[in-house]
Length: 122
Image (cartoon, rainbow, N blue to C red; front, side):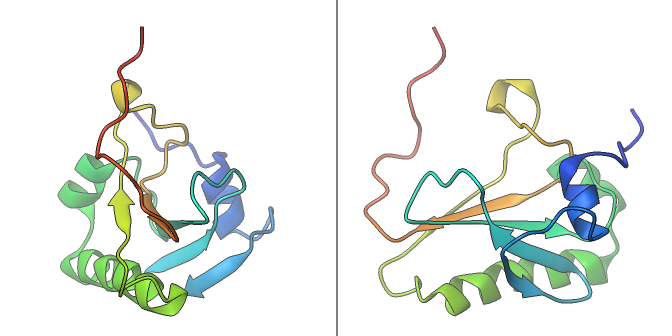
């Protein structure tokens, strides 16, 4: 399957759609989710055309992988959520309910986040 250059995150990366930016460097862009699921809910996306963690881990360069992971850590520090903790989550495919076909990590914080997994679909 080819990367969809018209997905919403690709458009955000190109500046066609605005975002509330938290962090940007040569490897990643982090911005507030438009439908937050916690008091703090930020998305961190790599700047390359990667659909999923599988795609990213197989095709990204070592520098892209290291830079992206460092960006996730930087976001946690910048948001001031390291002390009380935060959750990172990456969805992959249909069963995880990945909505945008561009690899991204959710950073959740700002409250007790409860148990790890929700209830399965009926």
